[in-house]
Amino acid sequence: MAKKSSDQIKMPELRPGVEITWQIRTLAWILWPWVRLLYRVKVTGTENLPKNTGYVLAANHVTTVDALAVAFMMFFKLGRAPHFLAKEGLFKTPIVGPVLLACGQIPVFRSGRGNSDPMESAYKVLRAGHVIGIFPEGTLTREPNQWPMRARTGAVRLALETGVPIVPMAQWGTEVVMDTYSSKIFPKPWHTVNMVIGKPLDLSKYDGKKMGVEEMVAISDELMVEITKLVEGLRGGKAPAKRFVPSEHGLPEHGNFKKFLILKAENDRRAAAGLDPLPANAKVKGKKIVVRKSK
Image (cartoon, rainbow, N blue to C red; front, side):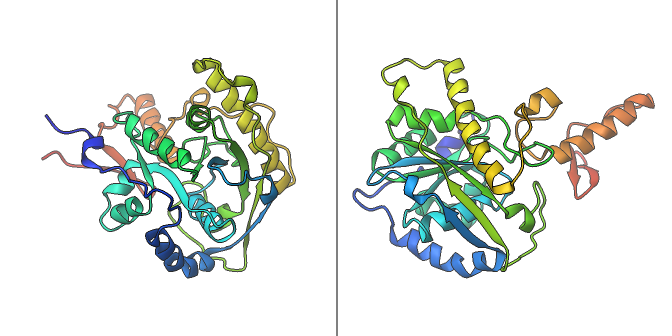
């Protein structure tokens, strides 16, 4: 029997009393000139951040380079070590995976296998007084105009189970450098990615209460309301009254939904023509559908 992914990836360990390790500091300064080639970062609202404690920093998720921008801000603007929960595949990439682990990043298993280990690692980070950066939506937004969509419950769960504050944050501007679900990057060193940090969400009314799924979903929606208000301020517009939920629009919860729509359109065309659907191993590369030959 094949081992589970959680057995194949060694979870990061914390050094007591040390937040910014030499590995994090070294990587940050190596990446600094490359980040500055992409964009500038400006942050306001730092006075809202809790002092001398760990917290969950929860932001909207628009593009693949969001985490880089937020991590840059956390290290160079806040003086905090950035810790993120990231998808499992990144940690299996040569060089990148070991570097991420050495810098205290935490792998998350999208399949649901071994999720207790990543969450426990995140709890340790927070209980040690460090900061977890997280995108509550769990993936890049699928909202057609890049507004925040529905949240998953992981961010709120981290805060409630460790007793640390959860702080809403909005960021806008990375989409100019890299569009949602695009693989093309357009460096714009003169362009500013704006970020604003809101006041911590008041979770005191939930102290001592047993939280079920419905309660977690409701609190997560409260968080997204606050994040959306901050995004509206940055964009100077109004988000749709109803929050976007991918499943209500026939979209998958994870993965590149644009590729999903290309496959769906082709299968719809085949069905209308009385043809067999695409095989299960059909993939989209660029804008073309590719079917791997069976060995």
